[in-house]
Length: 376
Image (tube, rainbow, N blue to C red; front, side, top):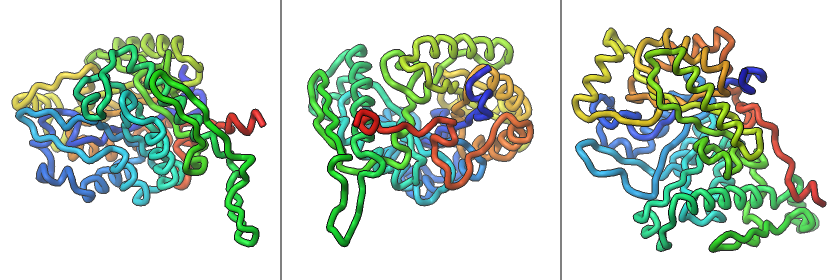
């Protein structure tokens, strides 16, 4: 049985990048491609996900522009999308992807801390690792191999956590009468030396509302990167539910065995195509694949809402949650909110986040004490 099930905290997230996970999703979208770059579309998608009751929404990203090809793709920076959505929402977690291989960890940690303030404690960080030499060129840095990229991801997360801890919770005084803004004894140097950089600190913003933002990342990183949520890719079709659940259980056991802290939640990745308006999911997928074939390493579900509920109920016994990748957001996101999540809630499998809570609350994660306060 999973930690999420024991705590009653099976979580369900959704990826909101582009028009959906299928490369031809834009062809079935309800808006023009140019509107992908509008705040209106970002706001509408996040509002729909929050109304549906998802635990968190993720925003994919890459330093490189979306690849050229027969399909129309576009995106705004993920942290900016999450920051735009922050004051428009009150319950759903907002988890943007942020690059860790060639970016400056101090700046990334500061951006994400600011996002957590904007979201009232509902921000997370999806760590992305990509050693692509083209990305290195964008940053003006030498390219590294995959092993070095993982090491840099581990360092970037460690730097961010130290910076978030560098202000104790009660470091801010804000006493106008005495002119004191902070207690200097409660602000600490976050000294860290990496392979090609060093950080002295402290952070230039106070400690985030959550203390430390929950860090999400590929389960393959769990042995080297301190993750709060390990995203598990189990490349098995959901045609045989029993087989899929068994494969996910095996993958989750391996992820937990390699977890450097032994505390990360395991959340499985799942592509989703649902029946809609009398059209079978298989027919919808065939039509989309007729334009561009959809190939991913994630497990895939193609079928009805009740069958997906059954699958997710089974998965709740072996993992702590699921991140859904709807094939077409304008279709599958609505079906998920109307016909899937309500059934999961009614069955007691899933609870939507409460307004005013933090993402850590929703994930069942305790708020960490600053390491420097403990040492003082």
